[in-house]
Length: 240
Image 1 (tube, rainbow, N blue to C red):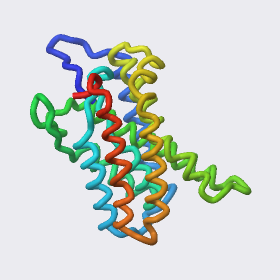
Image 2: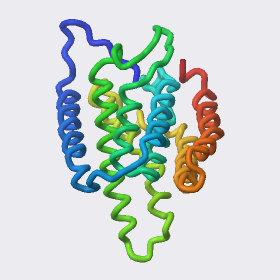
Image 3: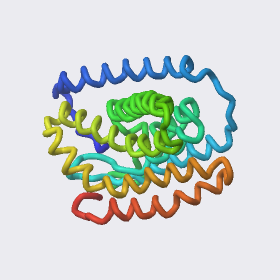
């Protein structure tokens, strides 16, 4: 997200502050509950490191939409693929990498975690943690439904990473900037739902092919990522 500059003497909206505090508390609870849900499963660090790099690369190539005052990227699809392949704990590393390790060139110069307002980094990290926790619960519930088609739970949760992130961002901007919730959601995110849906399907395809093809399955992400970025850039009046 592009920061709103709060100058000395300006009061930060109390409702936005309360929201961030509650989000952080829920996020910490989610982090604490993860080992209780999954234990500490063994996994290979190399493919997880590759996914961490993908998350950082996606955030580094995010596009700023001035109309919505927000950064948009394909990161949610990477989180989805990571979750379906590795599970909860490795995906926490991917989320951390995308949230804290990025470097992009904007009109005002290089952007990185150290010159990004703390509240935005805080929101980005913890809202993804909360989404991951909710997605994991939903996924396990769907898998436990008798007679469920084997791929149906994955197909249902794939687009939810993006949709839940859009909803939480809309709520955050309503509380911080006073924007109209559904109007902001419609004007900022709905136009990108088709490309986000394509990325969600590609993340599912990557997750299904990864056990057989390994890192080569990442190549399946290339075309959808390019197409989605072209889609983001298709409305030049909305980005910079």
